[in-house]
Length: 169
Image (cartoon, rainbow, N blue to C red):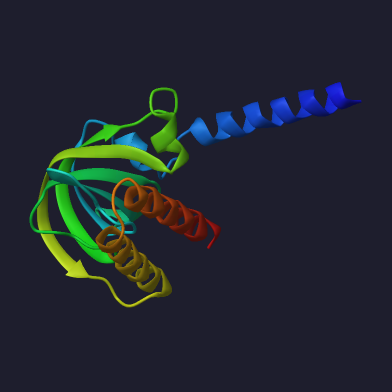
């Protein structure tokens, strides 16, 4: 009996992976290798090092809503914040679940390198933008009040909680 439950769970997991790995008609992954102008909204704190790594969703290409998220790379300045709407021009590099399972599990289906920002503006107020701004404020306070590695650990936990909360809504 336990063996049959295990086999059923494995089978359902394989079916789920197969369905998740298949890009839908409206997916950003189908634009692999193309130079595009994309409008998207920053939904998470940018990761900053000597550059910014920004995740964009609610993508619009040529006036058509597109599924998926893009991981875009920018110079360190100017700083972008969650809730901003960016219009960018870049070449799409599609990701596959086989080569990039971690990114794919977060819904990231493409990357943009050498990104040119055509415009940046604040998006209209929404619960999502407010949640992102609150998280930004909390992570900044954590970074200012805790030493490393505790501040990075706590910031990572907060970001993960935000992603789970966002995914549930």
